Amino acid sequence: MAELITIDDAGDPRLDDFRDLSTADRRPDRPGGRGFVIAEGTVVVERLLKSRYPVRALLGVERRFHELGEDLDAVGVPGYVTSAETMADVVGFHLNRGILAVADRPVPPPSVEEVIDGARVLAILEGVGDHENLGSLFRNAAALGVDGILLGAGCSDPLYRRSVRVSMGHVLRVPFATFGSWPGDLELLRDRGFRIAALTPRADSVSLRQLRDQTPDRVALMLGAEGPGLTDEAIAAADVAVRIPMPEGVDSLNVATAGAIAFYETRPPLS
Picture 1: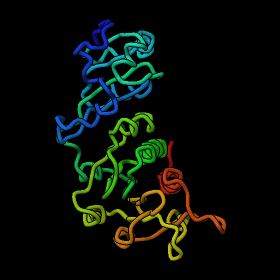
Picture 2 (picture 1 turned 45 degrees about the vertical axis):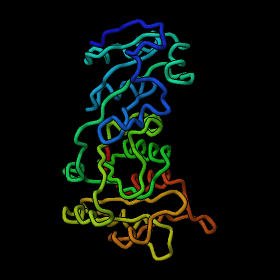
Picture 3 (picture 1 turned 90 degrees about the vertical axis):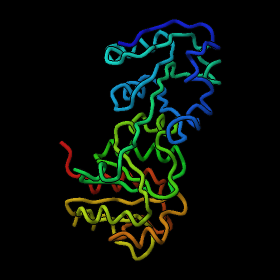
């Protein structure tokens, strides 16, 4: 069970993991030059506590610790109880969610092969550098039964604090891995029976509904950055280019919205 410790001094060194959140998850001294995994708010902290990420400590106001209740029973780490004012002094700004948790990243991170194994529907991302878009894609993937996410060139870090927050902690639940070679490593999916579908509004793509009607046993949906979309190289490496049918004069959607539609159309039935 978490040991609750009251701290009133913002300069207490026991709070250093939480200090200055603008840099705490970009620390070069952490494994791989990455920082901690930082969860904000009771819902996201609860998901972190239930995840595979090794929690180091919690910091929050007393009321938020009470809200976590039995979820604290399974973690033997310190929980630092403080005031909202002291917490703001530590993290560098007022945090209205009232509780934080920090965890280490897994070493080594999951491999592409581990994410592929047993998956039925995967998402592949290229160039999604916006942390909020990335977090939204993870949230949609979790909600719509996507088994894992694979990251190609130009993607931001899913474990960056803003992505974790926007995803509502689902980046901690949906398996993900980064390709070592892009787009060459797409052959790993094709060798395992995946049909790779690239989402693009270009004229020679087929309707997403056609893909739905001919959905293979395993499908990987590839999405690009909002605005430029997928590169020509990525589209050429796919098995089929597909589009979401839209009225004339409209040719694009927010990438997270496009992903949600594609995930819904291709997922197996959910009970």
